[in-house]
Image (cartoon, rainbow, N blue to C red):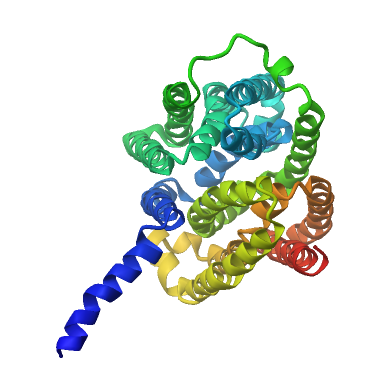
Length: 443
């Protein structure tokens, strides 16, 4: 009894030292908790809004926001991913001027993309309202939602800066705050009779606030970490690395452009090929399945800088060992847990959102399987980006997008929202399995 009592403090001390006090676990824990809170809030919002609006208006709201998202993603270079890679290197080496220059370049790219997306949406909004949303009077709401992308442009590079500096608790705090703001605004506006307008305005305001919050905190912390902003132009300071950075941005832009086809085009395609009601069923299913992203994103956010650091110190063996541990000890168990969660959905979903959404149950189950596969291979993107395999990733995304279109169009025409979910699962499976085999056996 005494030996057991004496061993308990020792066991706790070992557990605390090896697990709780590890920075990876702490950072992952705080982001996961924040994302869990965000998932719960978003789930409540989705259930209530779906019940209040019904399938058709819920689908219209989804289509109004999906079109600007599609246009923005079309141009988005995802400079934050380049910023994480190069800021991690410059920060590790103490190259303060280059770190500042990378931030400046990231902000310039993000604002240029936001402005370009706004102009394109402004010119094409009447066509989108008429053809995609099937409600010409929604032109103004499409433009309102797109305006929020301009202040939101501060978020990408600011997030990369905070991640590089290891400020994951602050990232978690910002995400929870903006999610809470969105849920409160959407529910308040929709419940007072704003309907689709309430959904759009309730999402637009927090979208803008996200960029302003990230930008403010990033400026303060970068000043503390790297001193005053240097007066040299970023392009001059980055001499010798320009081609590498531009190549990364170019491949990342192309992969983001191709990747937006399955991620953003699905709802828009349903609205175009079918009707807003079909889009409403699919949007609900995607919202439930998308809760998995609240697990994937913190995992990737913490893992990416760590793998990038291992690459910067030239330790390929440690990279492969870390990837294998992440795959078999973290990714696959979590993925299987999500698959099991899909089984009781027929008994859960209709009572939550109403019997009018009964056709969305099977679609939700299929999408949960697809997102479970994504979760199982969460480490794939950080590994490829850290290792600099942008050309392979970009080519694979291109094949992924082409395969999605080939499968999605005929399946959607035949099976509607269910066909779209089947196409999504098939193409996600092929993409992740192929790239993981290449990474493990040919690297």
